[in-house]
Image 1 (cartoon, rainbow, N blue to C red):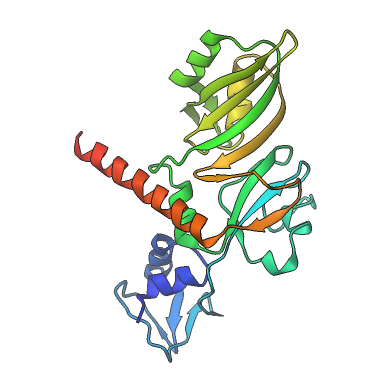
Image 2: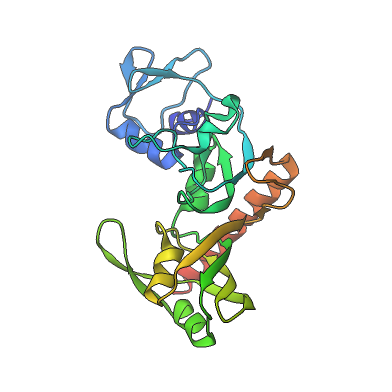
Length: 253
């Protein structure tokens, strides 16, 4: 018998942590009774509802997708813009992206119905690395690379000022443009574009090539492939390792 929060997460609704919030808010019903007990166990014959909608556990699925430019990473858009679900197979429309890429950015998106996995991959405390290849207009210098590593203050969508950090590895520097590999451990919206803008550069292209242990290798633009069970196991082991290291560092002060 699974705990209620795990049952909700296995239905692809959200993570277990978010499920706890739904339970405490009185939005979860088991059979005919609203349940606010976090330790409640679901029996096989029970029917579980979230916001009056019957839910059922799903088989967990993990895919990788090469997002083309011109699509946003939401299921629908009030402005009528094209979304990744316009090109994804219909049977994958129940999956959610692990993080986002802005409309003009391309590259790797992991798609899944595993709410706990999404939470772990995107939680700011865990700091899962994401790798990008970025082309900018102009010559990128060593001092600018150090500046990005030490932190650049940018403005978030809410207008709040935050310090953004990035590791950079220039791969091709010319007079009129630079190709740079960028590693992020944060997840602020349009972070890379904003950081380069503060240094006086315009991002000409931005492609994510890796997220944790998953790479874009073997994918063509617009193509989607299932992540093999062995790779999922390796990915989750990698995330567990990062979490342990974070916990150890926190314990050490």
